[in-house]
Amino acid sequence: MAHFELKMKPKQVVKRLLSALSERAEDVLTLRFGLGKASERMTLEAIGQKYGITRERVRQVENYALAQVRKSDAYKKEKPAFDELEALIKSLGGIVAEDDVLNYVSKDRGTQNNVNFLLVLGDPFIKEKEDDEFKHRWYVDPELSKKVHESLRKLYKNLADNDLISESDIINSFLEHLKEVSEEYRDEEILKRWLGISKVIAKNPLGEWGKATSSNVKARGIRDFAFLALRKHGSPIHFREVARSIEKLFGRKAHVATTHNELIKDPRFVLVGRGLYALTEWGYVAGVVRDVIKYILNKFGALTKEEIMEKVLKERYVKENTVMVNLQNQKHFKKDKEGRYNAVS
Image 1 (spheres, helix red, strand yellow):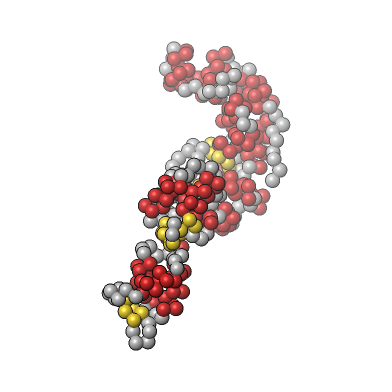
Image 2 (cartoon, rainbow, N blue to C red):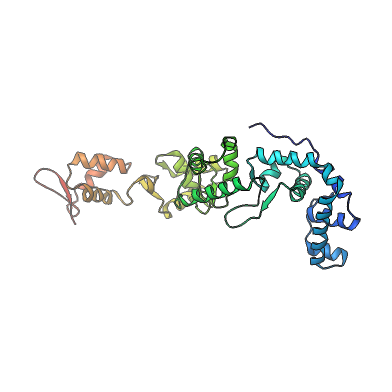
């Protein structure tokens, strides 16, 4: 989708709109919305102290001033600016997180404040405040907004706590819930923007999606980054390589000894050879080689030396001789007349 450039100058439009007000009313809106040279927004309390009035009185002045602007001739004259802003919201998906729309328009805080003021002022724009599920968001189509909210809820409901899903897969799942949405909105950039409205679904540093509360998504410590690095690699690697991967993929300092200690402590990882680690979720068995042999024999029953070797080497990066030495320990393993081994219970 082509980048939507605003033709109007937000600061100039706002200046013309505020000219309809008394000096104090203009000042209150300027301070409340950060429309002046200082882009910091002032609280009702701070403005009240400036004027020696209560915060409630400031709120009344603010609401009265907004109503006055909406009734003014200046407001009618600026209709093209509001139409342009409405077209922008539609081009971004019809419903968009507040930060997204403001950052899209400009990186300048002052300009963002002026655009925010125009959104608050303009008739077509509806704001829903941040809650436990969603960020602050603006929309122009209530019906579409309802569908997007419902679909995001369904998407979250279908995620297991530690699921990690590729971006293309989560977009496809999202589309499944959005069957009635018109074709113009079935655009990858728009869908990603809609996903970004949610506070309970998020993307990890490798671009995979899951529940925002999962350590696989909001990676915090070395263990979480090690998990993501190993998962990306897709097969067992040495702890030194895990540390290197963390630095390369995430730009985080990872000392080799610290990384090794963290891998040892975390049940998500399993040692499968000298310094080699795999993810437990890949199905590797924890424990020393003897434990692995016992696990295999308990699972499959009596097996020949060759069958045991084949299965153990899928679980562990060890020498064949290590497996043979363990099998000869009669305290743990017995060989039957057919030459097959059983675990001693």
